[in-house]
Length: 195
Image (cartoon, rainbow, N blue to C red; front, top):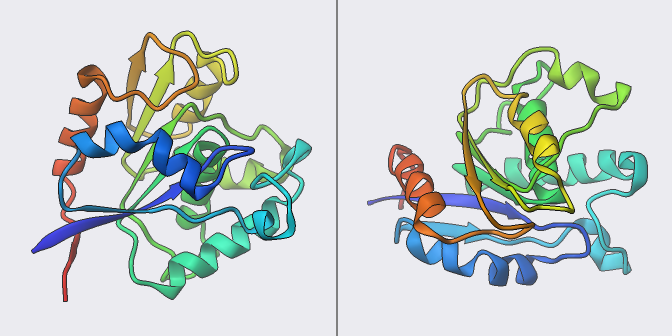
């Protein structure tokens, strides 16, 4: 039987356990054969609280950690991120599509909720072209933490993004208008075979 395995990246001041709680309602409406994996940012082990800080300070450490995690297996079919985790999902997708990425660093899709993108010169090389990876971008029209315009900038990094808006704020919505298109998107993904 095929199932999907998705790497889930939490927000700033979050953790894997917090994201599991935040995404619980949405996850319950998706394919029953989806395995969600919720790691903590590597900085949490030393009492820190983000994937990086102001100016993307710490990004390289997080990038290297994520590449090692994905390459170690078992395979992740997709990546899901919320807030800073969504920005990380976008950056990791760009790393995956870059010429220097290890061949084992692969996933087939990205779902980003309340995300933003880097405009820093150090990331410009990652975004020379629009990303080909299929993507979903969930945007809250009342989000005051990551305004819709910032999430739309992230979506614009992708060649063919599916953009889903909801009336709420900086949350992972579970209402049908968002959950159903995400479920349909995931239904089109093949997934990994169980051994």
